[in-house]
Image (cartoon, rainbow, N blue to C red; front, side):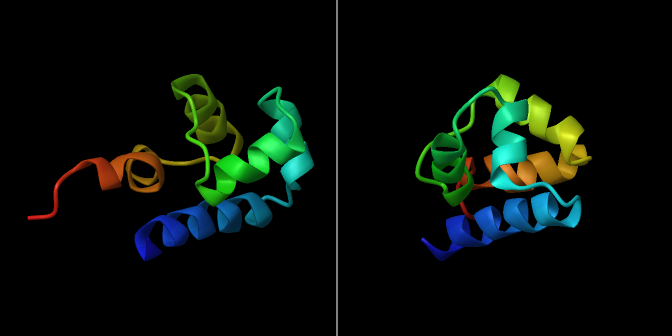
Length: 77
């Protein structure tokens, strides 16, 4: 559980770094602020197109996209 929280904190930190509110990002993703908040907290998953938009909006590298959204899909070795 803690691992997911860390990732969501990383996403929030990046959003705040660029001075975006949850409402700002929600508008970019064409969703309500409530839905975006659930996604940012990890309660709901982001779609591929939403991840692509976030990558561009928040200037995420490919490595950051993997770390924020996909690294928990791989088994721990």
